[in-house]
Length: 239
Image (cartoon, rainbow, N blue to C red; front, side, top):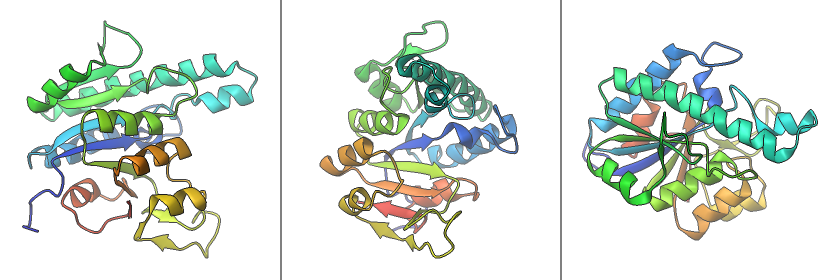
């Protein structure tokens, strides 16, 4: 592979809401958002088309609402709206880096975001705009992981970049088990059979059925997004 030549032309980056926490315990660290935006500009400058699916766990997680007695549908809707807040923050950070963006919401909020219309989104990507997907699929019971995979397939992304706080997939939680071993690569079926916490099982199965690889890597190491896009060995590849 030529040095500096991307291994992928179009990628979907899955960002958890926690990715925007930075040094905070709650909410949005705008310095962290700018840091992510700078890394994304690096790969955009290489000619890579970028779409992002953002979560909302730094503001509200539906499962927490359910634990506290909320109706599941109501709790999930709050979580989906939290992703829109994160999307607006990320859009601001990306545009401060000089990137043209489009904020897309699966829940209609025309004052701040466009609805998801596949052909329009594809046209935005052709025009080199960065797409920020928010509100998941707009429906309760579906995680933003599953939404990320579905949108990646719809826009013909070649890979899902799953940004996390660990440097790949382990046989057990490395925070809890010192004997956990990291995989350089692993097959979809092994992830499902071993119930490894990469993405939810619906998302992983959808990737498996459509041969869409996932690269799981540590977002907190500067340059990792670019390394993944260049095809360098970073994190764990699920194929």
